[in-house]
Image (cartoon, rainbow, N blue to C red):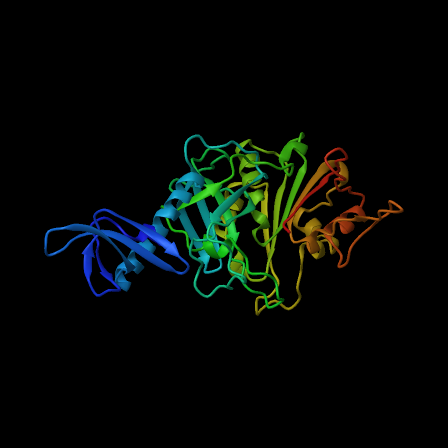
Length: 376
């Protein structure tokens, strides 16, 4: 409270007098603030008086708001190290964010991720789930996101190799209340309030082993499968492969609830026209015209991928990358007592492919030809 008063303020005293603050101090006694002030009486004598003090409500409110904004700016200045340079919305719940770090940009390998973060005092998108309990004013909220890539130059349409931009690109979906009683998301409702010029925190480096370091033969077939925004790391991978004149077939499989969720669809169409070895398949599961849902594991197990390619990818001549929903992946679970592995239900791509002779990674030290990144 004392910081809301300033020298020169005309204040109202409980005694009914008014005084201008010149030499003063404020003392808290219980719940009441006492103002010690210098006043000159009608006889010209100067004396120190004590009284309860209050500011006009509108001035007090303005002072509190001003000090809160100053506090916010202090936190932002100390923590935020990047600027949002572009927000391109596919629809109200899906957008591509471009974030330019201050100073030198960290390098990354296609497929890696970094973090984005905001303070809890930043505003949340109207209509999104409210946080209960409300977080502390200066709670810092951050989350890891795979680094995406535009692939084609916005103006010329030429290939842009991953890592050659001044900004990082992120492909993000707004997390809403799904009615299952989950806690309110802390970050995406704030991210979707960001505009061009907004300040934000970005991780100082990119990390992760979900990269193309497994690909040492440019003639092998590469299959990239993702659910929703799990497509993000594959965009940077595609750019690197095509920029380096990759010879083998490259297939990008994406599954979403609606075809409206294919945020990079136009880019994929252009790539297929310009590169005969590139193929894209988007699988929408809940569009009105869809008679039978086909997920990535179905597309593979039912031979649709083989038909697309005109051949069956063999373990020794293919590399598979999958990112997204754990149910799509179906990562084997090892029994702690027996050490035996079992596949979870429902059927995932790892079980499908291992049944065909392929082998998924068992940690960094035991690589296979199936590589994966779980999104939650």
